[in-house]
Amino acid sequence: MIGICTDSNSQLPQQLAERYDIEVVPVTVTVDDHEYLEGVDLDADEFYEMLRDDARPRMSTSQPSPGQFAAAYESLLQRGCDEILSIHVTASTSGTINSARLATRALPIPVRLVDSGTAGFGVSCCVWAAADAVSKGAKVDEAVHIAETLAPQIGALFVVGEPDFIRSGELNGRAGVPVMTVHDGELDVAARVSTPEEVITTIAAKAIAWAPRLNVAVGMADMSGKQLTDSLASIISESPNVLEIVRYRIGPSVGVYAGLGAVGCFMFPAA
Image 1: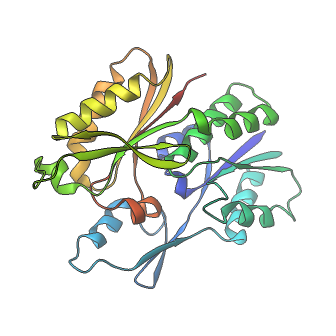
Image 2: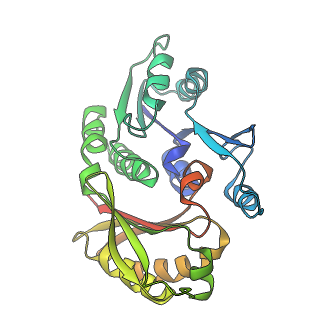
Image 3: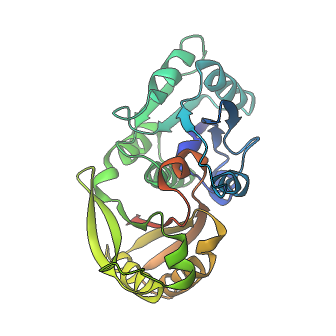
């Protein structure tokens, strides 16, 4: 049996973690010298409340330790797994893969480590696709190939740091709010919009057009984005080429950089 592991930087929603029995190793988030384990003793709502203070706290993240990975792998071993597929944030921005590698040395079963080549929910896209393949009978080599090669096929669209605009639609004299995308690992502006309604229609149109058959995820940071993400998910879910849409929260390890008001959409071709 193949066990699957990832780290919490993936923002993997509970819905997918439970469906595929995935072990999620928490990233450490430090806020004003206090260390928290993402998703264990610091959830998204608690984290964004910290950002609402007038004095923005000092924040940083660090990868899980080898000991945390060893505990996660042991948990999968105890469930009867005889192989482990461990999919993580790209090594170009994090030492997570190295921590995971150190944890494999004393394990009596093989662990296949995968650098997803991406970060944030992009990692979850790779986990989702590989786990779904495993659930349908794929061997570990096929699942590794899916996880390693998916990154260039993942689309991402998001608005960051715009809680007032998302809530009220006020531009405060600016020419437009950027809807961002990622192209070849670099941030780019996909469009500029003037209203929250244009955020919804722009992201939905670009997401639906991404591929003939899609899996899609819509996420938000703090609750200022709830109405927008509800509407966005509703529109996208009505498209006949969308096989499944899931919702996720932009948790602390990504919220450290995205801030309040972030709304995102990820999509990738479905098998």
